Figure (tube, rainbow, N blue to C red):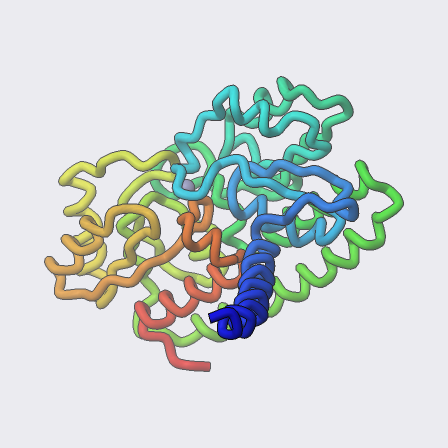
Length: 311
Ligand SMILES: [Zn+2]
């Protein structure tokens, strides 16, 4: 008994060490631990902002996500506990007044001296959504805009941590290269498709992406918070799908697929899912999904759904 216990102990220790390393590896991508090397504390509102700040800040920044995984981004309202969690951060980063009309006031009220409020949409030209009024806030779904957001991130981090400016700008250069590569993949991947009509049974979120690659975009909802669509709008989407000869209806990640399924069954189409990224599931967050992996998944779904020729 004693012998077998002594033999088992090193194995258990090894297993534990391996599991600890695994957990740390998984954690490292989305939940940076506070360590002495992480000097700049950042709070970011939604996932694309979080991911851009995390990649630009690298080992110098500790970034936390304010709108939690599983929450609806457009109807999010910060609670007093969010202000407590965000106290003493040096950078508050958000996607713009159009996406988060509450953000600037919230940040201004934070108990943090010398706080820098970084609007990552600075310099990005907002598009009007095809349906609905106002401007389309989903700017990160255009790779040129995402690059501009990363520039704003590098500028903000350099302003609060000037000695490491070169480090942030070298991270920015890597981000720009990765975004350019994704852009090239989208261009070739969507160059030759059986259909160019994206029939989307979700809210109007892929307008920037559709415009960039010359796709027709029909969404069930407007660019703001999800509301139950009227029967008329569902019928309208089915009409657009039929007119375009669509073979696929796209559902929205984290929304009920019931409308996509209803339209698809009416016109005899299949369903694929697209992820506009401002809302992220807990499991995607914990498993380390990032901007690039989500956009790669979106390209695969578009390419399959639109019947695009493999480059
Ligand atoms: Zn949205």
